Amino acid sequence: MTLKKFSLFALFSALILSFVHCEYDDHEKKITALNTSNGLVVRKISYDEAFKNKSVSDKFSRIELFKHNAALNSKIIHDTIYDFTINTDFAVFIDDGLSQTYTFPIIRDSQNYTSENLVIKIDSVSTVAILVDYGVPIDSMKNMSLSEVQQLNERFYLLDLDPALYTNPDAKMEAPHYEYVCTDNYVWGVVEYHEGDLTGGPLYEYGWIYQGASCTMVYVEGGGGTGDSGTTTTTNTDDSTYSGSNGGSGSVNTSPISGSPPLVDKNCTKINNLLGLPEIQTEISNMSNKTADSTEWGRYKLTGSVVQTPPSTAAGEVSFPATQGSQKYIMMAHTHNSPANSTYSIFSWNDLVGIAGMIRNDMVDNSQFVAFLATADGTYYALTIENPSAFTKFFATASDAEFDIEIGKKRAREMNIYYDPAKKGNPVIKENNTNNLADEKAFLQFIQNNNLGATLYEANSNFTNFEIVEYNDRTKNIDKTPCL
Image: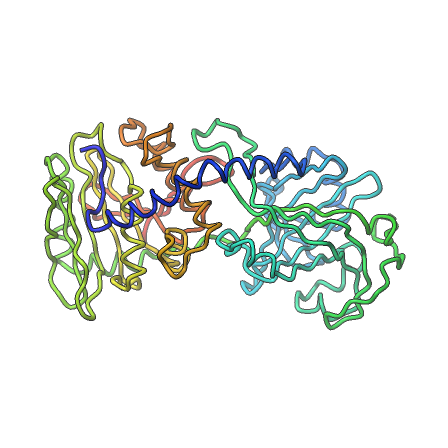
C-alpha cells in the first residue's frame, strides 16, 4: 500500500487537497514579496547568539535579570523586581536595517498571564527593554486570522522607567507610567531557524510578525488611559533619556513567542483509564502481531458498547463508521501494515484529518479518547487531543463553520512541508523513510509548532508501557517522560 488512511475521511482529504493546491504557489509568492519589501531579517536564535550582543547582556544585567533562580548555567532567569521568569533558551531576532529587537518568552507563576513577551530594542540612540502584552494567550495567536490579530489591543510598557510599577502585573495599567503607542501592522511571514538544516527538520516556520511604525512614547495617567504627552522626558535606570523625539520614537518589530508549556497530560489519565478495561488491553496488546498482514487491522470502542471491528474497504483499509445517537468514540486503534518501506512510521496526514473530522462532527468523547497506532516499521504510539478546538480549527476546510482562510493557507504550507500528499516535493515525514527517529522528531515539531493541542506517547510492542514524548527545541532531541 502506498498511503495509509481512514477511508471514512477520503472526502475530507479531497476537500483539503483541492483547496490548498490552488492557493499554495500564489500565497508563497505573496509571502516572499512581503518579506522582501519590508526588508526584515527574522530569525529564531539561540541563547548564546542573543547574548553575544553586549547591549542585550548589559540591558539584562541593568534591569536585574541576572539574578538566577537556578544554577549559574541555567538559562531560566527570574527577575525579582518585575516578578516574571524569562526562558532565554531561544529568542526571535529581527533586524530592519535601522534597529534590532530580541524577543524573549515570559512565564509568570500566575497562569492568567500568558500574553507577554520581553523585547530588547537596540538602535543608534539607545537600548530599551519593553514588556509587550498582547492581551490574549500567545499560544492562541498562531491560529488567529489577520482580522483577528488586527483587533488586538497591544500594550508596550517601558520597563526601565519605573520598575516598581510591575511587581504586580495587574498594576501595570493602573499606576502612572510610560508606554509606546505605534501604528500597527501584522505580517504573516517566515521565521527562519538559527540551526539551519542540522536537525533534519524544516528550515523555518511561519508566524505573525508585528511591525509597529511611528512609535511615540506617551505618558499614561493610570487606569488604562493615555495622556497626550508624547514629548515628556524622563530618565531610565541606565541613564538614557527618552522623549517623543528621541528614544521614544521610531519602530518596534517583534514576533509573538510563547513561553507557556504545552498542554500535556503528565499523568496519562486517558491512557491509564482505557487500559483499565480488560477488553481494550487484550485487543491492543495484539496489534504488533498484525502489522505484517497485507491489510490494515483496526478496533474501536464507543461509549456504552463493546470493542468492535471496523469494516474494510476493497483496498484493505479500515473504515471507521459514523456514530449513531449519543454514542461517541473513546478508543480507536489501527495498523500501518506491511510492507514497511511503503508505510508511515507515525500518524499520517489523513489519520490526523480523520480524527479532526470526527471531533468536529461530535463523534468523539474527548475526555476519554485515545488513538493507538502500530506500524510495520516497528513503532508503537498513542495520541490524545488536549485542545480539540485548536486541533479542529487547524484542519478545518472551506465547508466548515470554523474555517479561516489564513489558517487554511498555513495548513496547506505545513501539509506540503511535512507530508506532501500530492508527492510533488521532498517532505520531512516520508512513507519510505528508514529513519523512524527523524519521522518522530518531525511529527513532534509539526504538532508543537502549530499548537495543535495534541500529545504523542511512545509505547512498547504490547502497549503496556507508555512515555510522553516532546521535542526539545534547545537540545534538538526528544524528551521522554514515563507515564505515572
